Length: 96
Image (cartoon, rainbow, N blue to C red; front, side):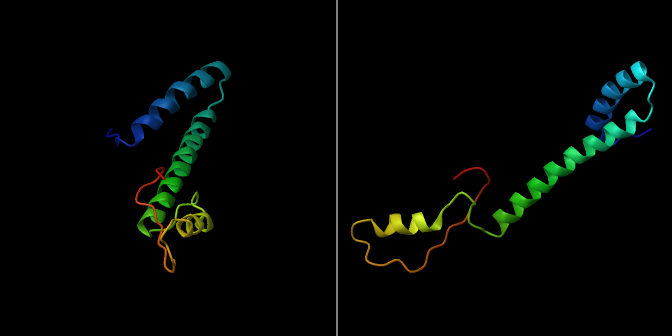
């Protein structure tokens, strides 16, 4: 039986926890429940990763940046007469 590499962590966690619960309680439904829970955890991580990737690819401004404060800071620099066009975007996630 061929096992895809992506299934190995799921199968290992599924079997170790599932086998213990099944051997103690006899509930065979535990195995698919644990598999679904692991799948949901992986799905949530994937959604977050795709969301960050799209934001970086679309060159959106990071959520933590307050544009008004940036503009005010630029205006307070000696010698700055006018600010009319500002571009802020992320080139990676988690670094500001």
